[in-house]
Each structure stands twice: as C-alpha cells, then as structure tokens.
Length: 381
Image (tube, rainbow, N blue to C red; front, side, top):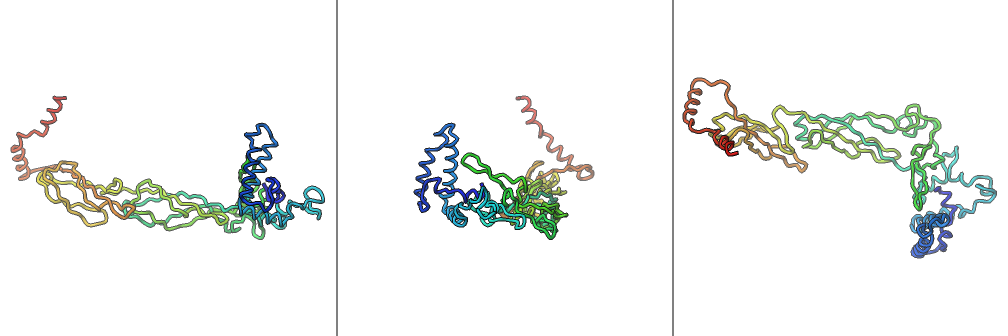
C-alpha cells in the first residue's frame, strides 16, 4: 500500500463517521461494521470480504492517535485526494500525481520520502540494517584459560566500502531511490486483513538503486575489511567454549547496530595440571612409607606457591585430597579447588638396608592376606 493510496482514501467515509469523531465512536462503529461484513458471516461473498478489508484498514489508521494525525495532515496538504482532474493519474496541471510519491530521476526522491514513516506501513525510508555476526577462533594456554587473558584477534568482515562511503555509487554520482519500494527496501502485499512485507526484488532490500556502480564494491556498498582488536577472554573459560561479544561483529548499514562476535576458544593442555569444571587436578606420587605411615606432603599449584597437605596413615593408591581455593577462577571471582590424587610409587630396584627392611616387613605381615576378602566374596557369589 503506497502513501498515494492512503492519501486518496477517505477512511472517515469508509467507516461512516465524521472527522471529529472520538476514538470511542470510531471503535464502536468499527465493531458494528466488522460483525456485519466479517468473512465468517458472509461465506463466499467477495464484496463483503473487500468491504471488511477496507473497514479494518481504516480502523487501523484512525484508532491510532499518532497515525490519525499524520493522515489528517497529509490529506489536508494534498487536498484530500482531490487532485485528479485532467484525466487518469493527472491533477489538471499536466503532471502525474504519482510522481509526487515515487520520485524522479533528477531529484532522486519524492514527497514520499518526506512522509517516510507515514502510517508505519511500507515506510518510505529504508530501515537500518544490523551488521552480520562474525565467527573466529583463538587458542589459549592452560594458564590463560584459567586466569583470563586479553588477546589480539585479526578478523575479516563486511563493512562500508571506503571508495564510495557505503553508497555503492561511483565517485561523483549518487544512487537514486528505488521506484518500486520508494526507498523502503520492502514491498507490502495484502493477506486478508493484514499487510505483509517482503524485501524488494529490484533493489534487493537496500531501498536505493545504483546506476553507475562503484568499481571497488560493484554497487553493493560493502567491502571486506580486515581489523585487529584486543578482546578480553574471561577467566575460567573451557576448551571448545563459544563466547559471544556483543557489538564486536560487522558494522551495520544505514546506522544499524553492529553484529556480534562469536569466539570459539581452544585451550592447550598442561604438562602437570588437568581440569574438571572449576576444579584443577594434579596427580602426586608418594612413597610406600608415606602412604603407610602418613605425613605431610608438598603439592605444586598453578601460578602460585606450593601448598602442604596432610596425608593420612594407610592412604590407598588413588586417594584424592583437596586444596581449597587453588582451582580455576569462577564467573563470580571465587576459585574452585585443586584435587590432588595420590599415586603410590614402587621402587624399580631395591638393595642393601632397604631390601633387608622390606624382607623383614614381609615376614612380619605374612599372616595378613590382602586378597582373602576377594576369594571369600568369589566363593559366596
């Protein structure tokens, strides 16, 4: 529905209400007419269906205070659609009324551009377009992932062409308003009582047509742009995690918001430490006497001084100890724990006093069979 169509239509006459009718009167009249001409109450009656569409369209404008004011002002300015004498499409002075709205080749726009937002349907000014989202990847060391890091990222995305400043037109020329959508970038089509908008095929949704395209961007107004930015990766990020950085993507068009940047993080392994969620892990070897008799062992931490942990007497292989607050940084600034797994080591070669002591220990514990419970359970199964 064009601006010309709106101006020429008398919505007050369609509803049968005076121009000074109140909103309540308009609403009451609309409900009465809508019930009378509703398609469900007039099966197969094409005229009733058209009448219902006209009623709905009129009410859509007159029931909105702002749109009603714009409608009244536009009709007052253009003589309430009375500029029709002199033949179809003319106003009696030798020019086409539609030219006022569709623009001309020389001016690059028409009166329709002035009322770009009139009635909020098929607006005559192309809407801002949000920039595209950009995907990239980064590899962090284990330490950087735990504590967070600021890293440089070089990205290539679409931005306004520098040669034509985003217009798409060759230097010294300017694009013209698309005559099909009148600069809206979209065209409306009727669908029952509703109006649906589709991207304009002639201008591909830009609202402008370029007759002499820029040699750099070939008329698109967009070109690949490489840039390097410093991006802060938050502490505690995990391998394969995807981070969204709002507004760091490609630039928008016509003042539109920039897109977002999505960064997929890869984390390198550490030769000593591992990770389980917010906790770090480490495996610490202990000798047999330490495991059997207990004691205090010293454990390394990531980027910090070593901590001392108490090893209970009779500790079995695989026992896990916990060093609180020595893990990865959480979102709230607190830290997880360091999980220490005990691994009892067996000497490869034993001789001298150590060998003699082990033989004595073996003889002293010969009556104790560590596998007795296993055989007993197997027999009872």
